[in-house]
Length: 137
Image (cartoon, rainbow, N blue to C red; front, side):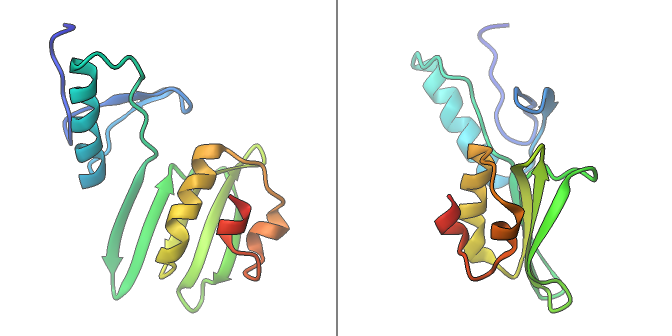
C-alpha cells in the first residue's frame, strides 16, 4: 500500500547493507523515521537509512552501541575493559562495522562516523588510545 507509512518502534525497515529487515526501538530512530516519512510525503526519493545506535546505563556505567556487532566480527579494544573504561570496535572484512563504548561517551559520534563510512583502518591505530577516533574519521 503506497499510502501507508509507519514510524517508530513498530516500523521495520530494510537495511540494504546488512541485507535484512531491522526494527530499532530507540527514541532517535523513531524521531528520524518520522522526519523521513514527512520527507517522503513531500516528494523525497532518498531511501531511509539509519545507523543503529542505542544507549543504556547499567550498574553506574554508560554503555552505547553503534552499528550491529556480530559474534564473528574481529574486535579491537581501546582502553581498559577491566576498569570499565573502553571502546570495543568491531571489524568486518577489515572495515569498522560496529562498536560498544563503556564510559567513553565522547567516542560515540566518531565511532558512528567510522561505521557509516565503512572505512578500513589499521587495527593497531584503532587500538592506540594516543590516536583519537576523531583523527581516524
